[in-house]
Amino acid sequence: MELEQRNLDKFDKVKVEVSEDFDFNDSENMIQFKIVYWGPGESGKTTNFFRLREKFDLLKLTRGYSIETTEGRTLWEDSLYLLFKFTLHDVRFNIICHVVTCTGQERFLSTREYVLDGADGIMFIGDSNPKKIEQNKRSFRELVSFAKLKEIPYLIQLNKRDLKKAIPIKDFKLHLGLPLQESYPDGTLVVYPAEALQGKNVVQSFTDLILQVIFNYFKE
Image (cartoon, rainbow, N blue to C red; front, side):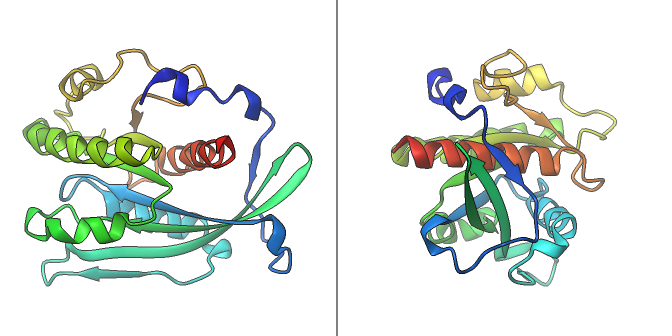
């Protein structure tokens, strides 16, 4: 994503608030977003999904569901609705956030377009296993071709940083053609190093993506 597209200066005072104080009667200031978790098979999309479900346990509109194969891999999608509030120029907005994951399995490639339909933001989950770099590259190319066409903001999370021979973040950036600096001018990281099993950087990357989606929404 181009650097100028990530300038959030005018939204410096935006605050995403994790709160149970959600007003369903305030329909005028209610916004619904859809966040899709995308990436190669077994990179950790569903693990991110479960960590978010645990973290925001009191803020769930639904219990969520996960449709898996008999091998325990995502067949269709994981789906969950979360509730948030944010403040922009002293106006409080209610957010209903639909979080879904795309299956990373090649044999179910045709299902992704349905899951991506109506997406407002995408989180790419990369795999730190050096042997998965080609899958990372292929999946990321698919994401970029889809996101750029519809101008959908996305962030990149590199999961499984606790692997003993995890690919260096610089090498990962080079393979995917990403900027080598650590962060963009708005403060979001080019790549979020994560350990989804332990919940490391799962919530931070998610809330930063929410801010990107909010900016994209009000930019229009």
